[in-house]
Image (cartoon, rainbow, N blue to C red; front, side):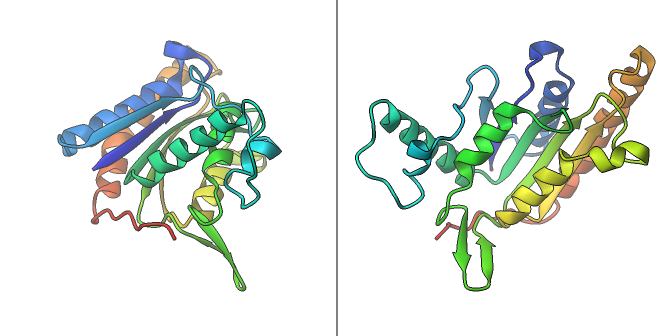
Length: 215
């Protein structure tokens, strides 16, 4: 099994999402000791945000690459190849300003490639990345899963919609909230989230994993 492990928090070792994503990967490795892990720290090794010249490399409009763009087009290919080679994707995703962190959005924009991870048809877009599983380590400073804050959750809903667009229906979320509402609330939420990890991993591995070749 190939695991793609993404971290996107800007908080380094103080990051709750990094702690959760690491716990998820560790649990996957305990269940499948022969699994291989590709780890990308999208904050420490940032992927530059998409530009028209970079996007032309995978959107059917590629001509001679302007100075400095060839390397970024090669990076796009490397990122999508890593994604397509993976059966399980573990995403460390803190909520920043009600959505995902900017480094994670930059990665998303690089792997959403027509003809590789989705295609357009007369009936609408069709995802080409089905058969993979995603586990999101979701962290939030406040409470957004229920109550008044639920309408401001553009983080988990966005990730579910994006991976669904690529054809991935199996998205597990391990969530820690209220992380900025005092040490007691933070500790309790993290303990609860870590306790969710074994079930999320078991559910992810409950049926055979497949990675269809994109067309």
